[in-house]
Length: 218
Image (cartoon, rainbow, N blue to C red; front, side):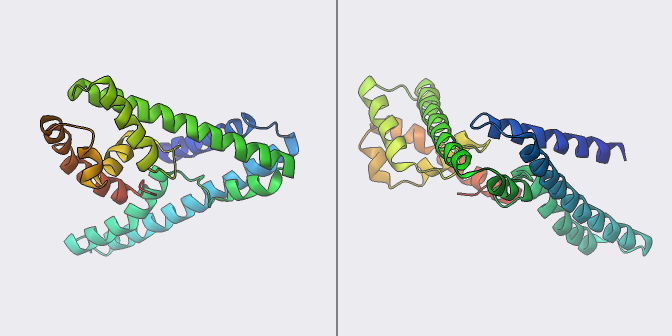
């Protein structure tokens, strides 16, 4: 019970964070905030209805003494989508909150919001690329020319659709590992290439984990 209350509070707090995020780009009237909050609470309610249904199915199996390995696997299949939704965030592009937010703002606010969000995404991505180059340089020392060329490669060839995601560094590594070999070979020598490629199996495993968590939307 306490866990449920804490989870609801955390998700309600997240609504306020989403509102603050919108207001970083364009001021909202109180009536607009009210509609968006109401939609966010709808997302939360819908999620907990699904949680309650999964719990009831578990309790029914438990009462019937049917908790064998097959049932555990079945319950895992019930729980995994819920966990994926939490990991991805309840207030994504298809959420009631985001849909109502888009419908609530006026045309000028919508244009300002879209432009500022796009610019913010570009800045975040640029910082992530630079940080990735800097971090790799500590493990695989590069010349200035190589660093510049590698940064250019990331900018031009590592395309990321959601720069606001929390796993951005991992996604850069995964996308890098999937580039044609000749693009990386054009920048680094053999020793550097071996060091970089030694990281690629890890990238493959991380991608599988992100997909399982529902956190891969590239």
